[in-house]
Length: 640
Ligand code: CUK
Ligand code: CUA
Ligand code: CA
Image 1: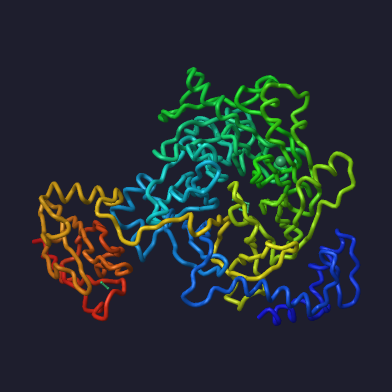
Image 2: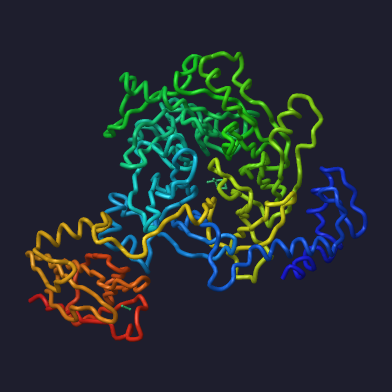
């Protein structure tokens, strides 16, 4: 397969044109016919092919073998989270979050609807940024958090069971986009950016005609990672795009691309510089403790004003001008720098985190004094990731490349020294958004694998109609040179991913009967005098009917029950099986009812028996040789 890739990509020109030109142009090496200089050694086409093949062998995870890393992919406007093994890029699981899942019953079951709360009415979501909770700057494997840009929510996934257990809607804002976690001392806060500037209050009193004169803003938000309640909000100037936090626990920084406060495309590109908004977390907490906050509308969340007034900074924020419509914001794993990616500028801006104390104490004349480097990288820098060896990897959307560059050399260049801070440019296919290196958001960044989430696949895969998959490419960054080793087609539209070592994620094999995930079902059963592990019974409560059944492969232990037309029926199924992997399903035919019941789990679902007649229910999760026979009947007695 590596031979084939070399042939198709490099065959016409003899070599991969842009890969070599990109690298040689910046390293000053010569490109002789059929040979290139890489890392000082002359590579022939054959030795290049051999090197790539060697990398590709590293990605081969044989049948029955396990991957070294867990990867969590956002699902974009599919609304879910996907779990992949890295380096095989095999999809291991999907975790429904902001979508509806026919298989697991997410969005249908009472347990999932309780998590979804008021937002259960929304059937869509737009999940961009998955991040693993941290302790002392390392992934602790407890939770994964993810934003919903579509309906302004933040969700938490418990990584022990890989299910979403909390969803919070952020009040008085629109579109939660950038999301990152406090890294140190632990993830107390989930920081999340509301992207769009809206009228405040947004009660219809502001229309198109009085928009210009209206009070309007967006807010930076902190969600308590344990309770998932909104802890506080900060009003900002401009808008908010991406965010990251530092390794001291004191700062978070967010990009703003709409400093213009414009509502049209041209307007949002008017300024040559927008800014990075830096948040001082201890000062925000102090302001709240001192009572220097307001609340908005019905919300009880304390809101601190972080806007400049008459050119004077608020205590809690600083605005650092950077060029132009910046997008990604990434903290280097050594904790030294925030890096803002220029998007409409070919640069990244490097902010020295150790200058932020002085910035907030007004020691600098100019906010730009915290910028210690602004390397020119290529066209359309969107996101940067790190190998833990001092190198940064930035996606260039317009150039369709990843550029590897050395941070300290870029800083020395900014100080006037002539360094070649760009180490390599590698073509990716095509138009990359996020990229992400293994463990890169933690102090343990290990520089092994780089995933590049390319927005277009064009001709890389068998054609599947007008809608194309995207292409998540795996790149070996363990050596001097980046080597592209795998193409991974993905469905719309992962924006970002995060990789953790497999020993950092500890999952349950079967459910704990005391799990809070089905605490409500346990409480209802207890009130009905039901032992969920033993009883198979129908409880009538006026027009409400609760049907309790257990299951053990290959049967439901209640194979018939009777209700009246118009009853609201809740079916509780408890899976008695103790054997790992023996999951049952419950599907009530012609009622839109389907759910997963994994070993030792209780699941419940409520529906209206609105049609008289006999209805089969069956197990829709293949569990046994007699899985087809695992069924029962509901009789709905006609109303008179
Ligand atoms: S964003 Cu999509 S490519 Cu939502 Cu992190 Cu940059
Ligand atoms: Cu139980 Cu299939
Ligand atoms: Ca702008």
